[in-house]
Image (cartoon, rainbow, N blue to C red; front, side, top):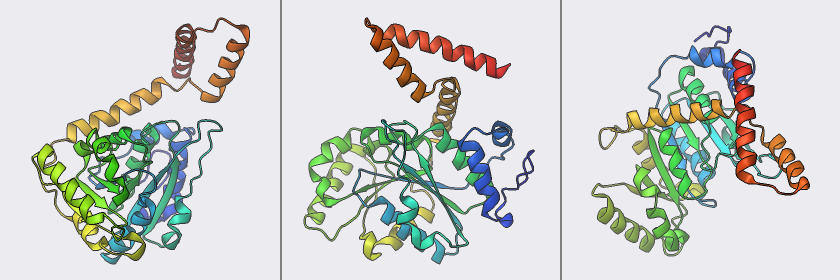
Length: 307
């Protein structure tokens, strides 16, 4: 598909143009807004893989990619890495963990920093997945940072959400109930060869049956050994277990994040930290007065940019 900027993001043209379009969008380069507005609506399915740190999400995704390739699918992965709140850098290490597929002609892997979004879902995540959908991949996987209850943001992006846990998460089941239960279309218990896995799975199933009133699949995997992956891939490619009644909610969440990002365009976190340091040095710092003044300046910048 050619855009008004003559960027052909159809897969037949190769990945270079897709990467170029993603870079434009990620960095707000000239013409990115025009590019986004030209994208056609696409029903390419998006699967979100989320869960706490240490659950083996990247290893799981790597194994899932192999399963999708075996079925002749072209797949794109958007791997979200945490941004340091101190130096605003990101490790972006998912390409290393998925190195087996990095040069495969049917696999496109892109890392993206969270840019301060606690749940790992920024407006840029949404915009970049829309570019990937327009490119013509058969399936898109978004792997998000696992940081607790705010992971529920992935429900605003993915058509189906898989929550990855490990047997040691047994003590955290009560915390899991606080948010992830509501958005999980399936639970994947990775590293299921560890002690206590069966007991954890039984307890999880009891909670799901008691609290949800619907059958949420619980799958066992050992991603490092490629065990249980076929069942995960088949579930991803199967028809939804129930009609997706969240479409309006998903789109509303996407539009909300996009509006939020555009309203915050005049706010630079690095400059904000410098301004706070200056204000603190003068004494008598009031956070709310400072925020009101910063918000007013941000609005002025946004209006000037529109003009």
